[in-house]
Image (cartoon, rainbow over all chains, first blue to last red; front, side, top):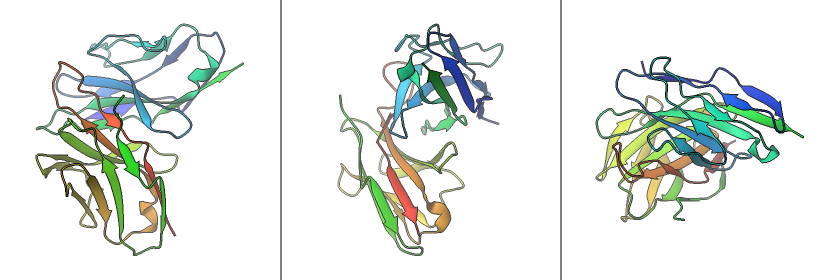
Length: 111
Length: 117
């Protein structure tokens, strides 16, 4: 079964602290993984995709196929990072490419 | 930066009424999608659309739902007879295509909040 699991509903840290938002997936093929961010119930914005291996707003994520994880990390959290973060897996069945989302983690960065 | 545009931003409708949610995808994108997010829950896939037909639909997308691309630019989601449980944020998304090369991420619209009363 294709599934994305974000075990933490809420992660609360102080400004300047390191952040790690966990994401585990279950997928039989070669996964394509993304992190999306949603600020104050606005649109979902693409933050990272694993194939590009880039760093956006200080966030990075490494795909670990052995652990089936794609955790999102940032060494020093900022207040403006407070948002909802969704890990997503692109399902490659046919030509659809639908996204399967995790439950989301609310990141709260306290001053 | 190109955007996916959704209208209206908020729609209130009475139970049993038909509602049409509208989306204008990014012009050179080929794949179109509808997702929904019930308040407090995760984003769920509804349907994908490519080459003027449905590619895949979820079990949520029953006979009450339909999609259309009537004029080559708009992409609509119709709910024929709304139920209270259809209240959610509906997101439209578009994508250039699939594969491991290039920018094949989705671009989401800002959503339409549908409230069924």
